[in-house]
Image (spheres, rainbow, N blue to C red):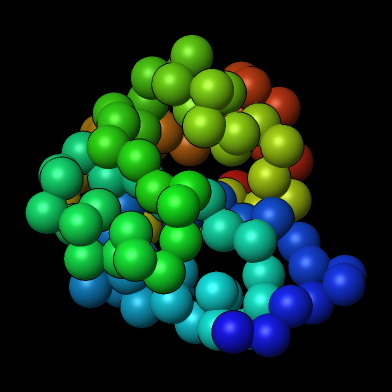
Length: 102
């Protein structure tokens, strides 16, 4: 893994196939990445590569702040199974001050 002196901090919410692959590519590019998913098995698949992955509900405001999502440059929501949870997550991220949510 190369380290990028101008690295941004990315947040990934949802570590299914797409979110996991995105997290891996960002780490390989030398970016700082925070990841979370509600399923422990998804965390277990990537925790050897980064220590900043957590099991949490994506719309829990205090948990998102505690994990550092409020300090991310960009947060990418990769939740495909539930549109209502995705919307709640985006609203919560905006509420805690994230400037760019994808």
